[in-house]
Image (cartoon, rainbow, N blue to C red):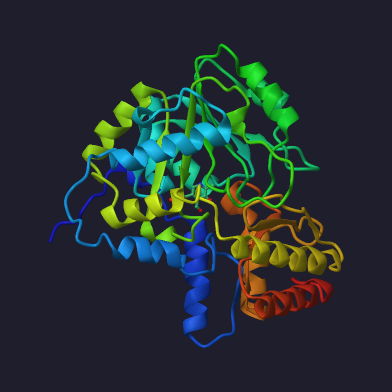
Amino acid sequence: MTQIVLAGRMAQLSESATLALNARAKQLAAEGKTIYNLTAGELATNTPEYIQTAVAQTLHLNKYTAVAGLPELREKIATEARDFYGLDWIAAANVVVTAGAKPALFAALQVLINPGDEVIVPIPAWSTTYQPLIELAGGKMVEVTLTDDAYDLDPQAIAAALTDKTKAVIINSPHNPTGTIFSSEALTELARLLKGKQLSVIADDIYNKLVYQPDFSLPASHGFENLVIINGFSKSQALTGWRIGYLIGDSHVAHAATSLLSHVTGNAAVPSQQAALAALRRHDQPPQATIETLKQQRQIVVDGLSSIPGLRHNIPGGAFYVFLDVRDLTDDSTAWCEKLLVKTGVALVPGEAFGAPGFARLTFVTDEATLRAALVHLKDFVVKGALA
Ligand code: PLP
């Protein structure tokens, strides 16, 4: 048999690093090792009952829908976003329902980016997926670091990175991997600096309903021009496996994304669209119990981490991540995470996956006993000198 030669574009494409680590932790668990898996990017709860009940009534619906989604769903997403962000230009025609937020990002980048274009991504970021999606469109990811103290946007640094090739800036708040919510001051300043530029602002808002701090505002409410909002129901409704998301953009962007997806996924699965409709009847709010549990888990982790010498951490305002600064402990956070996993069973995602060597991401969505045990092991590991 002749050797199959893959297309050149596959050379720089590897599996998502976050998914790979999660898989490795699961594999060790299957081999019988006790694993404290703090790598996940999803809630631990089951699909909410009200979604299960609503979808069960509609299982007979088996036909293709419009590629951009059920008209009623597009209408409801538009209404919800209009009210949530205070953006009156958003109508059903601006909404494209997709099979998760990832295809929404894929479509947005495919329709906006030409070969050679640059996309600014504030780092650390979920670059493990942003970068390949940018590169699949022929673009180049340009990293600009967040502020060192608070992981906030640095508007002046972003403005300084603009070139005549800059086609988009990706802003994700609440933020993966730090859980930070970018400050209103930084967003307002960035919107001012980008005014009149020929570029799009892609607001990845997938964590916008998982927020713990009382006062916050999100990128889409700050007057950015050429805004594309990426969102979905994966994180807010514990629907990661149902694959349901959307993009909202100018009518040209929405139309082009629909044409593209008509040849790739077609419409998002009908039961998942029905699940989204059910979620929107409650304004896509996660069950209150979910938020309360997350707040408790966040507190347990923040308290536990504060007692570990040499390890710095932030206090997240949203999402379900804490970002650990391990630069005082190691020069190689991938090796450090690997050793932590093998020695103690605690699985974290090394900062390299987010363009931030010297850091590690901890997800706090797991039961209290697991969290507390993981924190004890982590402290022990650090205190005894991890790589000694
Ligand atoms: N955007 C960010 C920042 C994420 O962290 C994730 C998932 O981890 C996604 C988008 C993708 O969401 P979905 O599972 O709906 O494709």
